[in-house]
Structures are given as structure tokens and as C-alpha cells.
Image (cartoon, rainbow, N blue to C red):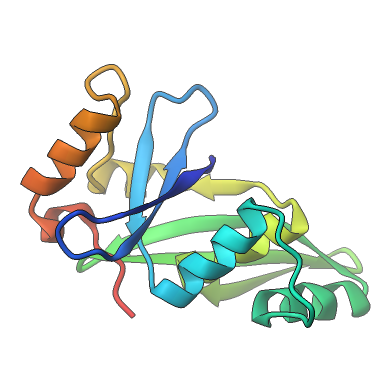
Length: 155
């Protein structure tokens, strides 16, 4: 999957990262914190900061220990909370690091790592199909949807 963009929940004004599959048939909204949304937005907009932000620091550390982010995976959805992991390859060894989805996505953007979502997560989460909605319908859908049904990201 990839990041389609960021939007604000029209009800709570909380940031939402919207993931899309390669064919743009499935969209997965994940609520994130404001700071994480800012970190994602900076990278999406290709904005350079004068000093490294936290996710830039993590990318730099990974590179300096001769490792590479292999992929990030949105791996689980339990009690309305998404779970993720960052998979790092170092000297032929795969290391799986537990992470919040927002941090994993921010790292994926900075390292050009692919983003995967487990099928079980897609089956559990409320996804959006573009055939049934356009941008205006998406807003209406979000307004009418119970946040507990979506898998709201909790901090």
C-alpha cells in the first residue's frame, strides 16, 4: 500500500492517514496524533527541516549501523488500535521492531520502504472503496461512521 494523503476527521479534527492499495480499490483510514501527522506531512511535501526530526534521526541511525528498512507492516488491529512493525535488514539478519503505525509510516516515507497491511487487518477494519465514494462521499461516510468501528488509532 502507499499513503494517499492526510485529512482531518470532520468530527474530531484528528488527523487521519489514508492508505491506498496499488489499484486504488481499497482505502484504509488510520487516525494518528498531530505530531506524527506533521512528520508524515513534512515528508510528503518534501520539506527539509534545518535539524533532523525524530524520524530523520531514526533513519540516520539505521543507515549508520549498516542496516536497511526492508518494509513496514500494519500487522494487527485489536480493540480499535492498529499495530505495526518495522522490518530492518542488517547483515543478512531480519529484525522486526514493534512500532506505532504512524511512526512506521513516517519511517517508510524516509527510507522508501514498501508499506504492507495484513489481510486480517483489512478484513477487520472499515475500508473505503472509490467505486462507492468520491471525496465528498468520503467526508459524509466519515461523519456517519462510528469511530469505534473504524479502528481508531490510540496514543
